[in-house]
Amino acid sequence: MQPVPPSPVRLSMRQVLVCGAAIVTLSMGIRHGFGLWLQPLTQAQGWSRQAFAFALALQNIAWGLSGIFAGMVADRFGAFRVLLAGALLYAAGLAGMALASHPLPFALATGVVIGLAQAGTTYAVVYGVIGRQVDPARRSWAMGVAAAAGSFGQFLMLPLEGFLISTIGWQQALLVLAAVVLAILPLAFGLREPGLAGRASTGPAPQGVGAALREAFGYPSFQLLMAGYFVCGFQLAFIGVHMPSYLKDKGLPPGVASYALALVGLFNVFGSYAAGALGQRLAKRKILAFIYLARALAIALFLWAPLSPASVYAFSAAMGLLWLSTVPVTNAIIAQIFGVAHLSMLGGFVFFSHQVGSFLGVWLGGLLYDRTGSYDVVWAMTVALGVFAALVNLPVRESPIPRGAVRA
Image 1 (cartoon, helix red, strand yellow):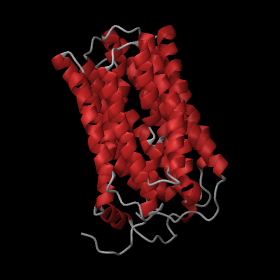
Image 2: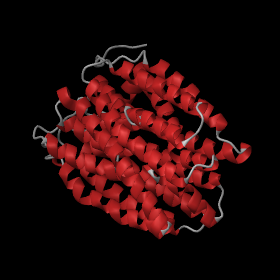
Image 3: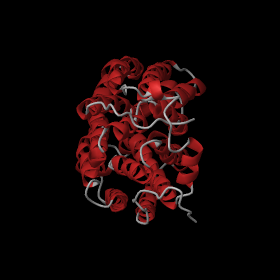
């Protein structure tokens, strides 16, 4: 499969950012709230927390694995077709999640179908358009804007999802979201890249898929970015899914969790934007190392301090500044090292590592809770992994890779 060089006729940056940001707001905003369904759904169905956690863990793996292939298709034919398919799958998966009466179909709908949908409606696909359509001098900033939009989606959608669950019930709330996510369909037209599909079979490409993969996986910095992103997925998935139940187990009112996750989304608007903007001026590897180390410190302080709504909100604000701020910086490094011809695909591989971490974070959270009655072990793991991720990002080389050079 040969990708296409960037189209000489570009979409306006404003159009790309508005439509891309709106799509990410919906797709990421909905998925960030899935933890709110853990207790009402499992209690209504009589399922264990592990059954729910496994479905979301499967979703992360399906998302990560299918994201590689969604990226390949988007690199060759453009994001438009991928976004259309993703939106339809998202609606079907949410409806299936609502109507499933047994853990197996629930896992298929929540895990496989929604995982496939997220691969086609989130960062890897949207960032491919940004990489091709936005000038490199503003690329990191533009990716920060898109990541900030995903954070705003969390801030916007989480209170809405909590309100829907409390007023019309968990099942009807999922069906409402299935209708809402179809708004991605018209937005996808704004990311339809001119001339891309038409030249898919004729435009020569400087590098094929196989060569691009051999180059990337043979380059140590790519492997280090994957290791760091694994930690990112573990931390975010565990906190996002299990923190609402952790807080309720500790006797805090249910509303605290909704407001806490909303605060994460609100403050990550600023954190993601700042990370993308700083990535234009500072060494991106140092930004990533700081983010991971600061996460470890924030989690450690949260566990050490007496638990109260105030401490939860302070932790949420701190984590919000660090939540998705790794996304624009990591993808900007990939584009800087390898170029944009295979950006969605290579971003998909790095994101797959993120989703392996997400799988383990979600699943181990449910498994160890069911076995020990506590989340303490997994909290400790998030701290240790944060320090590890900070260290592995420091040796990353950000300069463009010398094509054809021999590397050990």
